Image (cartoon, rainbow, N blue to C red; front, side):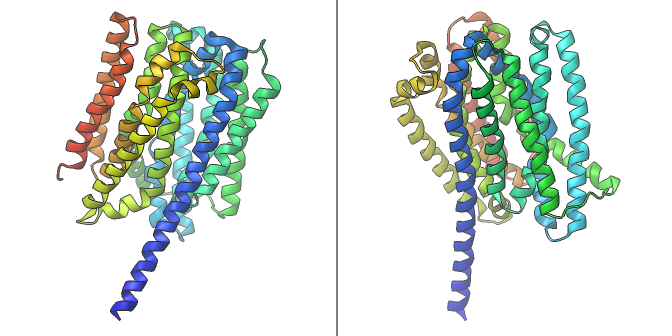
Length: 421
């Protein structure tokens, strides 16, 4: 009996590992695909648009990313958790779907109103209002893709397929329609239409394939779900918009060309954090289960060490060959980009660790603590970064960005992770 039980447990562990590896492989493949498409498209856009217009694209994407986070609103974690507990109960699955998309519709309307006000009240936004407004198509398209559903049923390959399909369509259209006479508006229009089309297709496919029916949930459930997502939203806000906030603040104090140079460096950061985000997403169901165990911290400690070592090695290797990577993306060596990339690449280590710590802490029920930490650090970072950009004209701000993520790691570790409830 003991041998049989041991064998059964071993089989369960092996199956769990296989599933994690499969999900991670699919999400990692998505990140690799995104990286390859980026390597193909950035030099083309940089050459045809010029540094200033490419800088407008980077700045506009930074602005609308806030509204992408607003519309997602923590549904990725909360809806995934709710669906995981309700799989097999179609009426309850329908309740979660209905709740998520009703809230997304309301948040989309709110986003449109806010963007319209920003473009009429703030001069910097008014200068490129047409680009920012058309960029909202991208946000709506992404919000239609039910990633939370595929994460709950652990079918990450669909997330990969839909994401790469949208980006591939965008890339093809850019090479076909964009030339030296094009502007940032043209690029964002193509980007928005590509993601909107794939978003609609993915939504309809999921509803039909999963045989999901919209069913209005009890008002009390929607209220509780919204409040739960609100705390997750706060915690995700600082973590996900850190780099975007840097670009946004930079756009108010530096030229569009400098924003473009930083934007290229941010592409490398996004590639590194994207791989680790894929791993974190694949592990998220297991993180939830280990959070309930008394020996869960031992598992998390090993996980944190693995993340740190993996990213440290990756960053050092990238730093050694940074000149070659920059030439690969821009078709030439740009000293302005190298000066930024040589420092900013190390932020990948702490951003990856911070995302993992956030997910662990949320799974332990420390949503309120994490949300307070994230909102507080976001506000402080905006103030300090603005001060540095105003009084110092060099690249000192890049060092601060790395240091701020190191400090955030320390706070998250001792207040959100190590501290007992």
